[in-house]
Each structure stands twice: as C-alpha cells, then as structure tokens.
Length: 580
Image (cartoon, rainbow, N blue to C red):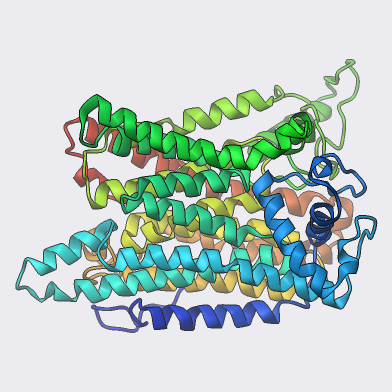
C-alpha cells in the first residue's frame, strides 16, 4: 500500500525490543490507548445487533433465544457466544438496565455506547494472551526458521550467536502485528464486532497443538466452533493433525491409540454437549440450525467479498453486458437480461445471467478440494518433525481459513482476517511466508474500507489501513533483510540482496494507492459514482480477489510441494524451507 522504508539498523537484531513480558505490556498499552481514542467513531448496525443479543439473552428465557424476532438482527451465532453475551448482560444491568429491554430497538445512550465499546477492548485480552503465548514459544525457538537458526548458532562458534536475540525480536514483531492489527481496529473498534477474542481462541488452540498440548488445543478449538461456527473451515486441519500426531503416534499400540482417541473425542463431545444440549432439550434445534446456516442469503453478500465468486460474478456481468450489446436475449424467458445482476445491493439468493448458479454444496465441495494439499502434507509430515511440522500446522490452519474465504458460500469481507492473523508467526519466521502475508494483508485491509462509508471516518480508515500495511512491510523487511541472522528465517539465503517482495507483489500492494485515489476522488469528480454506484465496490472486490487468489495459489503450491516431499520418506525439509 505504501512503500516501506529500508531498515536503518545494521545486519543483526532488528531495531525494536526483543520479546518480553514488559515489552509486550508496553505494546498492548499503546494499542489499547488507540482503541480508546476510537470510541466516539462510527458504529455500524452490528452495534445494535450485539445490544439486541444482550437484551435477548438477559430478558428472555433460554428456550426463546433462537426464536425471538422482535429485532431484524436476530441471534445467529452458536450458543457459547450467546452465553458470552449473557455474561456481558449481567454487567450491563449494573450500568444501564435500559439497554437490556428487547423492545428498545436502536438504544444507544452514552452509557450503552461506552459499555459496549469497553467490552470489546476487554475481550481483546484473549487475543493478547494467545498472541503472547505464541510469541513466547517462537522466542524460545519453538517453530519456524528462527528455531533452526537458534539451534545452529548454539552448536557453532561462528558470529551467528545473534540468532537467539533475533528470534526474540521476530517474536515481538509478531505480537505487535497481531494485537495491533489494523483490520481489527477497523472492524471491532470502529465498525463494531468481537473478532478479537474469537481469533484469540484460534491462535491459542494452534499454539497449544504446536506445543504438544493436543487435548487442550482440541478443547479450545471446540469452544471456538461453538462460539463462531464459520471457523469450521479449519476443522479438517485440526482433525488430521490431531489424529496423526496425537492419536496414532503415541505409545501403547492400538490400545493406547484407542484411549487417546476416546479422551480427545470425549473432551470435544463434552464441549458440544454443554453448548448445544440445553437448546436441543428446549426444542430449539431446528431454529438454531436455521439461524446458523441461512443459505437463503445467497452466494454473494450485497458487497461482494473479494474471493473467487466475486471474479465469477464479474465475469457473468461482463458476459451479460456483451450479450446485450450483441442483441442476444438470454434471460430466463428468452427476453432481455436483467441490468442489475447482483449489483443492486440486495441480499438474497440470486441467479446468474450466463454462468451456472453455485449452490452451497458446490461451494463446500470446492473448499474441501482446495484443502486437500494441506491435509495430505499434515498426514505425511514426519513424526516429531520439530520446526517443520509445527509451523506446518499453523500455516495449514491459516490456509484452511483462506480456502473458506476464497471459495466459501456467502462470505463476508471480514472473514479475511481469520486467514491473515494466524499467518503472522510464519511471516516473521520465514521470508517466503512474509511475502504471502503482505499480499494477503494488503488485500484484506483494502477490502474493509467500504465498511466505513461516512466522510467523517475517511481519513481515519485510510490512515489505519495504509499505515498498518506500511508498518508490517517495514517490520518484515527488517527481519528478512540480507545478512540478517536468526529470527528472520534466513533472509540472506533467500533474497540475495533483493527486496523482500518481487516487482509483481510490490506492484500489487502499491496499486492500492492509485486505486483508492481513483475510486474515492477521481470517480466522484466526474460523476461516475452517481451513474455507476456499484462500480467502486466491484473494483474493490476485484482488487481484493486478485490478492487473496494469489496468496491462496502460493500457499496451495507450497503444500503440494511439501506433501510430495514428505511422501518421499520425510525429505521435504528443504522444500518446506522455501516458504512457498
């Protein structure tokens, strides 16, 4: 988005503190201060959504939670998130009971706004704790090229002894980039949502599994699924890795494997039973299912998320325009094709004019096909693969969420964060993954800008999105600079003096600047936004789709190579280190 300044420091440790409890606390304090400054900013309808959920869970009996339709913003998250809202409502009753009336639609007093904003900030403590655990593990040498460099330095008398401090500096960068991510600032602390604690659960589950706490990781992921079911895209990665690395690779033969499977399965089943059981007993199973999977909303949201289906819809739009220009009547009744064609801002199941419609089952099947290379790589990974198998799992989870975003049915633009944030620790540990991260991060951030459409927030959203991308680029370039030892993941071996991003990748990232100038300033100046009101959203979606598609293809190719390498008797280490 904006060019990153060159690292000023000489080769060695990057120019920021190493990871420590004190350094993490200072970074968290700085980020929290920025969140507090955002409290008076724009609030989307999601603010009323969550206020209504507070009221529903506090004022209505459990049997009515998934039946009440007083507000159009009905409860449509899984039960554990509903219980999270119930917990918040107990405190809300002490602050302002008026916000807990179900009929008080649109209630937004000063006390209500302050309460809800502060709960988002407080809930981010889960993300901070998980990010700290992941970064501490990386600083200790637990995963990634940083671990390999640290071990090599310890076994050598060469000047590479800076590997340990450099790994700690990489861990600090990962922590800061995760807890201060610009996308979370825009979505949670301006637009208003609770993505921070959910991503904290995801990162915590991944870190636990990487560290060998398989049972704890499985339970954390089960909790996450029962708080936000859209993270189910990562379930195959958890299933394959835990089956291969926990159930089948322990001691005790078949009997031991059976015991481990029973313990893990029982713990996960207990989470689901505690979450779903009360609602199923109350006869809300059908209502709950309908709320969680509203397939009637259609393949695309009113604002197309920048994924494969945005490219598909754009192609259909272009084909329909060409057909009209040629005078071909290809409508359902043989007449003129519809002009709007999914660009009228209406949510619902719609039909394409030329290309075949895509049902939910087809999208789900495509997601599973896309996941296959990562699942094969996880299955074939060598036992006790150390850094390779650990970071492989973290990347597989990030890739699974990316597959869900890119090929999923009715995806929201905010879902891109679930793919980008888990990739942070791989990005600081390996230059190849840093390239993928920077392209995907640029796409994800730019795709969030239309959510904040008021002129009052324009400068704020641009500063946060472009500023964070520049910060991430600078930090990763400093970590992976030529000659950097240790935590940067061997940047000198990969880059050979070249910039971190290729010309194509840098061109894509920087193209966001002229695109934003054209869409927000140039198009309105010539009246184009009035004549073609959906054009800015369409071009934004296409820009995002190209970046996310590139990141998906790059990660997919890497997993294909790793799966082949591991299949050859575990000799895939060299291919893994390429970071593709």
